[in-house]
Length: 274
Image (cartoon, rainbow, N blue to C red; front, side):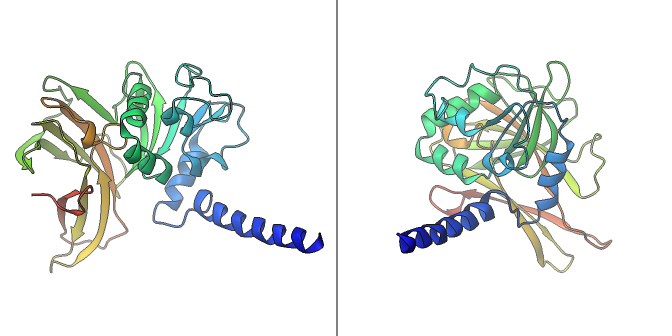
């Protein structure tokens, strides 16, 4: 019995270290971003969040895991979750959360339908964002949606640059813009992208941003799933316009001339898109 208990304790400790490392110990260039976003939330606000933030936010009276949204139900009661808390104040989401990403890929019709219903058919606006970590706040009249989907060309508050870049014959990057008048963080580059679907897209595409030095050396690269997990390319239908915003973060760089490069990547077949 003592041996069994000892083995059980060792196994539990190993599991805890594994769980702790992936859920609450943030070891990448966005560590400080995650902490700042959790710290910025009002104490009495209700929040829905992806798994990695739940430990930091666990002392709140109203805290919901986003897992319930893409499941479409409370994992314990099996009751429909999407209509349960209509007045959540904030959503803190890491769109690279592996639970969201891989479950969406494996059961994309149901998972993405639930995510779209929650995020697109409501008043969520971007409060803060750095790359794929986004803090959204409910706001009916002001603010910028993270992703919007229309059947007609959408209006924007600022002009976009024409580019007309076709991607594998399935969709086109019609327009883009680097920067905006609202950004005050010198290490963030807001990127606005307007896409149009030329057909029903079946594959999952990502956009890779990089920054090169004057001599052509790649200094860093970031990957962004087009449409986030809210409206990824594999659910796009012919004729849709998808407008999205992404905030590219840069490391501390010395004063110099740099080049921003981008490449489209087909994540379904693991190769650069044509």
